[in-house]
Image (cartoon, rainbow, N blue to C red; front, side, top):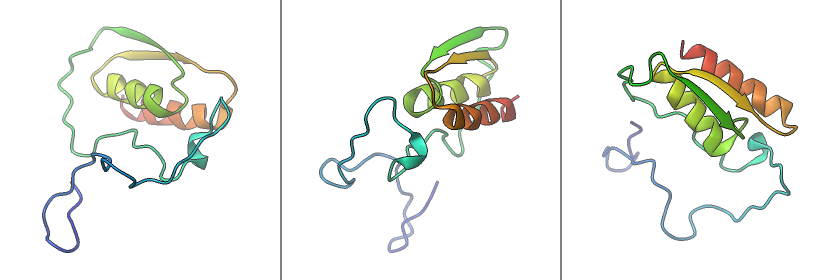
Amino acid sequence: MPRSEKSGEPQSHKPPTSGGFPKQQQPPPGVQSEMTPEPLDELPGYRPSGKLEGKVALITGADSGIGRAVAIAFAAEGADIAFIYLSEDEDAEVTRKKVQSKG
C-alpha cells in the first residue's frame, strides 16, 4: 500500500469525498487511457484464494472501468473470463493482457 510522503502512514485508495478529482465527461463509449486520473483496476497486495476456480464469468463492458476491474479480480480468483465490449479495441487489449497475466 502506498505511504504518505508527509506522515509515512498508509494511504487508502478511497476517492476524496469532495472535489479531489477534476470533473470529466466522455461521450460513450469512453476510453480509459484518456481519463485523468486513470481508474484503478487492480488492488495491489490483494491475495486471491481461488474462490472462483472452475467457474466461467461473462462480463459486459470489461474493456475499461468497473468491468475491467471485475474481469481482473475474477481472473485472479481463478475464473475463466469471457468479455464483450463495444468498440474500444485498445482498452480491450489491455484488459485481455491483464486477465491473462492472472492465470
